[in-house]
Length: 85
Image (tube, rainbow, N blue to C red; front, top):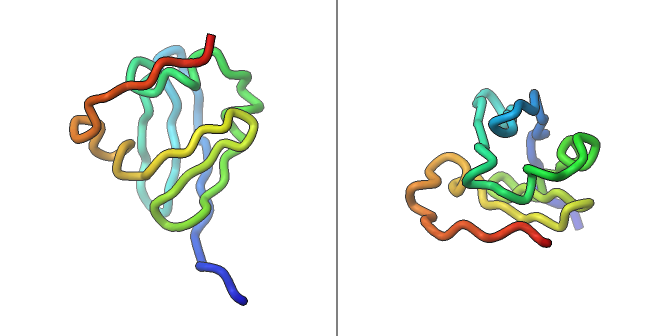
């Protein structure tokens, strides 16, 4: 059974403030204060991202699932999870 055809996702940079993603023709930024799981992650773990469908990103080494809308419009998702301790 064929799967959903999706374009790749690419981590285009990691800065001291957050993570930059390229998704299709769009550049998205995930600040660490809103996406705390990435703050202490190894860069190699951050770069290991999968696009499971057009609206779903997954970081298998971090066990982090994110809906693309939560990155585009974080103001619509006011709850911020705490990173594992």
